[in-house]
Length: 305
Image (cartoon, rainbow, N blue to C red; front, side, top):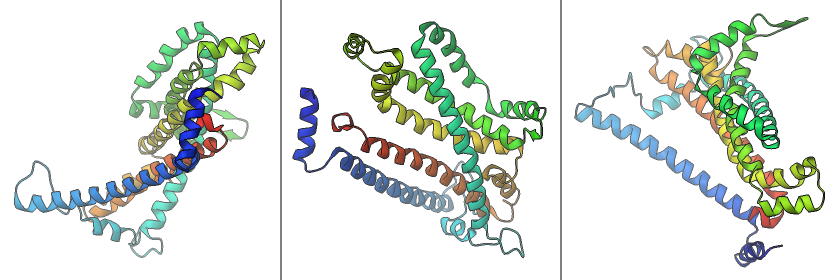
């Protein structure tokens, strides 16, 4: 253990908290700030509505455009369709779960592809020079134009009894957006080890595979976790936008479109669906955060600190 690592561990012992405990505490503090941010947003929303009744603002603050927060909350308990036993909350929860399944599958595929590309580009310098510009250029294609194209191509794909459906197209789009942050972040992380550490591995006659598994991967964790958080957010955005663009039923994106048609008679209803999309993003971010905590528990103290 180096001198800096000893100082980090000693400082952790001096404060009476392990590095993992500090991470958990920091997570709790972040959660508290998130709750405070939500409350602040609610207050600002109602404040803007109140100001809109006193002076003329450049945007509409009527109940039709900006319903009160309590009206949105009450919308969760309303029947989704008149005379139905299914409430809006149940419909939004089911749609959010469906979209979450697609987003997680797209996220896993995108992370796997991004990590594989990063390993190839790190291993072969000519591959990085040749592939990285195309990886970057792939993200310049407008998603709203890409989605119908992928659906059109996918509808022609079939392997025996298996048929490529619209759901698979949405999953593909989610993976398409998720792979880029992972490939760039993982590539940066795999290049993080110092020249001294790499020279030490060479002096032990370590193979490229051993260097990758025992040095580069552990050193890349501080880069991989943030990259995965961005990939998770990208997968959620890709899922919701693709559901809206392709018209796939069952997801939160389609539900937003359907509820938007009722905005004239039930303006608060569309916001309820938007809350479902927000919850989808929070769940995805929370799962990656849990993964971060789990990985941190298994790291040596000097690496966590």
